[in-house]
Image (cartoon, rainbow, N blue to C red; front, side, top):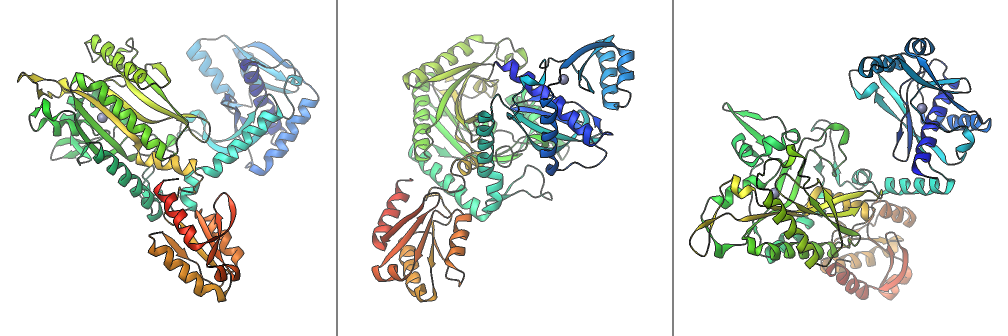
Amino acid sequence: MENDKLTTIRHSLAHLLAMAVLEIDPGAKLGIGPVIENGFYYDILSTKPLSNGQLPQLENKMRAFMKRNPAFIREEVSVEDGKKLFASQPFKIELINDLVSEKKVTEVSTYKTGAFLDLCQGPHVKTTNEIPLEGFKLTKLAGAYWRGSEKNQMLTRIYGVAFETKKELDEYLKMMAEAERRDHRKLGKDLDLFMISDEVGKGLPLWLPNGMFVRRKLEDYMYQKEMAKGYKHVLTPVLAHENLYKTSGHLAHYKDDMYSPLDIEGEKYYLKPMNCPHHHMIFRHDMVSYRELPLRLAEFGNVHRFERSGVLTGLIRARGFTQNDSHIYCTKAQLKNELLSVLKLFKEVYKDFQIKDFWYRLSLPDLSNEAKYGDIEDKRMWDESSKIAEDTLKAFKVKYVKQEGEASFYGPKIDIQARNVMGKEDTIATVQLDFYSSKKFDLYYINEKGEKEHPVIIHRAIMGSFDRFFAFLVEKHAGIFPLWLAPVQMRVLPIAKTHKKYAKEVYKALTAAGIRVELKDSNDTIGKKIREGEMRKIPYLLIVGDKEVKAKSVAVRKAGKGDLGAMKLKQFIAQTLEEIAKKK
Ligand SMILES: [Zn+2]
Ligand SMILES: [Zn+2]
């Protein structure tokens, strides 16, 4: 079955859904029912509220129609007749009026299925026999404004998914359930990692102690790595005068992603969307000699970008976030080597975080896009920098895909791509080449001959933003952080009162070894204490009872793995310290 066929099936199911709704609510008004990724939806203004509990009932009605095998019959009618046919459907009338005014149509097409008629372009299946009876499912309800505008009425959107076979449907539903279980927004709440408060504002996460603990670990880790690689950390403010962004080109190319300016003593200031211009000013404040290059400025830079409320997604898409940012200023001759060492650093870091499934994407410009790439008059710059980027990837001996039109407005870039839990491709980090900003900003260094020369700039963010990287880790590990990152690494759980004394000894020994441990010696049942520990995704639960007291051991339960059996306390501590040191 080709994709067109599946699209046709999904769209036909949308019609059947509308039919089913009209059967339980004859007064319902129909919006539109398009195909979307993996399925379809229909927007409906019902006379009585619909609930998720009614979805199986609607599904059954759809299947009952399908068993009668009605045909989808197309008919072209005059605009006038069309308006008569849809007289009781005001949204359809509005659509017809738009077709007339925008596309100057004189006829509209309709599809009839049994007694149901819809205004529709098609195509559709011939009869419902072509639709797999068990290949679809209605999944959820959501509110949606008519035509996406909050000025209009709120309709109910009924979502469905549909595939060629029941097997594919089941696999998809399983993946969805898994993604939901791992969703960092859900786990963020369950594990008290971060919160979003309406009073603070949409897209502005607040980090709670547990989440901040992990994040600080990530920051410490990156800081140590960068210091060891000769980076120099700086700190720059979140606001800057508009002149800076005029020079940088952000106001010309990036304004839609920035917030409205603040007025300070009659002058305009913007929240910084990127750290680059600030770092360029730091580079420029002192005359740099070629001997000091490469100069690698790094910052955990807090930036703000305008994300529409509809696309906000926890920490993955927020309005403010902190980049693990750096700008490397070097000579052209040093560029390839610097790029290589950046790629090596990526590899090292991802290895430590057990990120194995990633690949490289070389993003090149599409020079026909004048609005995006027209600023750089020197087209040779694009050829030269694109070639260096590609040569570096070749020298690094990795596979990469090329993508035109994805380069930033100042140069080509190498993106590190990975799949998220939903199986979707996502950029987790980028390295950008920039032959342009040093001219814009009048950045120079003094070369061997004592002359002024423009440096080349590499923009790079290894973890992307700490916020996104954190969310990525939460989902990758389903909330069970690797031991070295976990805020609480283990809990000691005595079975009965008589084991409390030994439990305390275990707790003290673990604490003395530098392990982050909690003692849960309440009188709750051991079953309850284990369940609580599992819900909190504590990596290890150590249960102690008669046997353990006697043998100076602990019974070990590992999160996500279950019972590992008893182990001598000393041996367990040694093993744990190794696990932490190796970042397993
Ligand atoms: Zn249709
Ligand atoms: Zn930058």
